[in-house]
Structures are given as C-alpha cells and as structure tokens.
Image (cartoon, rainbow, N blue to C red):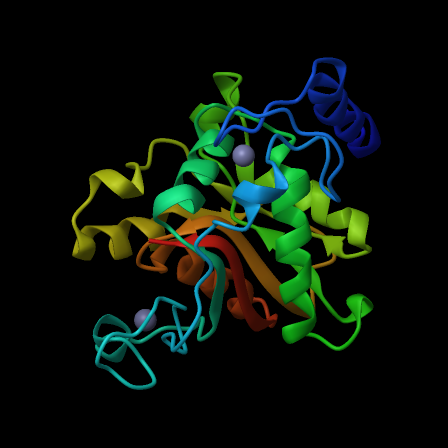
Length: 240
Ligand SMILES: [Zn+2]
Ligand SMILES: [Zn+2]
C-alpha cells in the first residue's frame, strides 16, 4: 500500500465525520493539524518538557545536573533523546488515544511537533534518515496499528528520508512487562536488520513513541552503529 494512499485514508476517516477533540469533546474546526481530533485550546494544555532535562534521556531533572541518576549509571550508545512531551496529564491521554484507540490522524499533529525538533540534530534534511523503532511482528499479523511507523510516514511529508530497515524478532517479551535489568537484555536480543536491507543510512535519527528507559532505542542504535551509521540521537513523543 503506497504511503500516499495511506495518508489519504487516515486523514479522510476523520474528515468525513465532524471532528471532535479527544480531550474535551468539542467540535474541532480549523487548526494547522486538522483533521487530527485535537482542539487548539486543549493543545495549549499539553505538558511539554521544559526546564532542565537529562542530556541523554530528556526526562526532567529534579536535583541532578547534566545526566539523571539512571543515565549516569549506564553505558549507552545513544546519547541524546529528545521528547516533545512529558508522559503525564493531557499529553499522556493524547498519546494513549493515538496508540491504544488507534486514532491515526493524531499523527498529523504529532508529526508537526516532531518535525520541529529534527533541525536540532541535522543542518539539512538530506543529511539524515529517520529510523522508526519497528513494531512487534505479532502485532502486525493481528492487524494492529504500527504507531511509530505511521508517525514516520507523516514525517516524510516534511521531506525527510524514512528508513525502515530494522525489524523486531518475533516472540520477544513486551518491554513494559519486564523489570529494568531484563528490559536491557531483552532489547538487545529483540531487534535486527531486515534481511536484504539496503542503503544503510550514514546518519540516523531514531524515532519512537514513548521512551521509558531508552533501552529499546539504544538497542536499535547499536545495530546501526555496528554497520557504521552515525547515530545523531532520537526523537520521541513522550518520556515516561
Ligand atoms: Zn479540546
Ligand atoms: Zn536520563
């Protein structure tokens, strides 16, 4: 299915019916991200990450400086994760509507916010490939939604190259069900290059929806770094 066709379907499903904001229920008329179901008043309430944040994972810092306590104690390949939102309040509700209720057209809003951050990592769009974290294959076989892949498709509208050359092995445990030490181990065993992957990017910016420990992103970064890719960092919708 072509990317153009997909965009049209996702936008049209929400455009056929009157669009109601998923946060307050009011009718959404014109916004730069229409037909994404989010009104301009609720958009102002979304919890952006402001103030000091960890240089690596992007989470707000409380009393630490530079790196948060967790990032200080680990060795990572990926050193710069930039989230748009803090995973709380209305921002968390909006991300859940997207991921769980599969409101695909919200990707039009999210991609707008993500696209604003890409220039922080690369001077020109031709310099960079955006690499989405791949979904669990079981999820796709079950006909579920690839929320990160869809964000990437929308980001391609901004002229960025999207590279979907990573895959997730089947049978891995879900990250959120694991304890921290097991998450790291599981992540490194979970991803690989797609068979016959071509055009491995010279410089990559990884993309994910919600970042908890960053171990998923780091595992993906390691695979690419092993192939000679320079890892510029990662952009994510929200940091938990
Ligand atoms: Zn609203
Ligand atoms: Zn951190």
